[in-house]
Length: 289
Length: 311
Image (tube, rainbow over all chains, first blue to last red; front, top):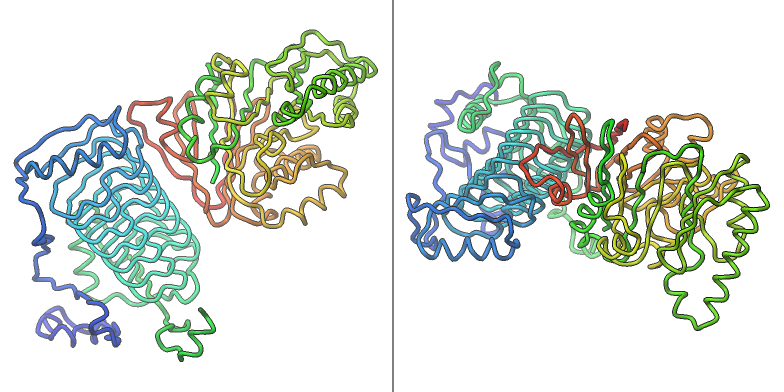
């Protein structure tokens, strides 16, 4: 695969490209959709049900003395009024800020938030100038979230789509059970990152803790620094030219491109030696259940 | 779930009672059953401060006879103090079942403590030259108000809001735990110890006693055991990650140190803030922001991480 050029990949159909990259086609038609990276495609996160908001219509909200429920309700009210850019000031580590936003929005959080911030989102572009607690971006479906400082554990747990970016370091179990999308980390990540990962890509510019990619089913992890240890069934694989192109694009996009480029990144994928649940006989499934 | 918090000021005293109350109140949602403090004031000049309870809070609802029982228990305690040559300099009672003594004593404090705890229904919460350990049912505002902690001056403190999962809702099972009989050492914990009974038997065989069935008490006894063998606090914390199974993040305070340890899975949270003159940590950032409302930089310690700070 390393011998396949970008030009050759571009000339291929999506199915051929998937095969050339060593990805399984699986029998998933009608069950899930696997979006292949296209170097020429622009990323768009616009949905038909998005309310008509104007990004140039901007407002600020001082959240210091508000409850989480009040803040989230106020965001929805403002969106219904057409505000496309909302700035939250002084969040003081509150939990669950900005969760469940299912449409376009430019949300800027000036400060740090607590647990389960901006989870279950589908569309908004979020920038957080401070730190986030555990489970930021959990179950995020699309859009972008950029955190300028550090993040807690289970960063991007079960993320399904979009770009979740932390400029600093993150805690343990980053991207646990992730099912799609991209997680980018400028610093280090803790133990058991990518645990039971199913799809998507995770990029960590710094070091990774022990048991990286433990029991991962699929997906790809790129680590720029040292890996303390690989988890069960996680294996290293040679990067393709497409991998390098994708890394370069993503890291450049978020200002995380290392001075020495992307050649030093280690690619980690699933060895696929563990049981595949889908291949079990009905009687075997019954035994497990 | 439980919430833990700790703070230490470097080289100066502050209102650690009020600060810890604000932090614990912000963590109330993590544990509404009981709240506990271990606060460290300026060390006394050779005297000991003993915090002691002579009944559980719920015992006070068991009829008029309880008052006579408590009076008898207090009489027994003071008889034992006298027997061991301890001079009571002051005595205060925040509640009918919880007392604070300031003592001068030249003898073996461990023997004195063991003798006192032979009294039925009596438990020493803490004994030391700086440590004062207070715990009761209710939230931080309730406990701080009852025990006058809102203006407690000191260098450092740890605290706990408890959601009872492993044992009863009572003061005995509330944190912090004093590392009996090691003066001025206290522990708070968030997690579950899965080799509790094995380790407890080991500690009991080594001569240590347990006052509750709460797994967190093991960490206090374990720490006391190591310190009594001359192990440093930092080494004890590191050793615990190898020897104690389960998921845990716990804090240990001594007369002039505050330490933390996180298990091998990093399964229990801790957010850490460090500056040149103060370190604060808690299960959630919202607790730190309760005393530092301005924007601050915080981090999550990683798995198997051990840290110790000096007052």
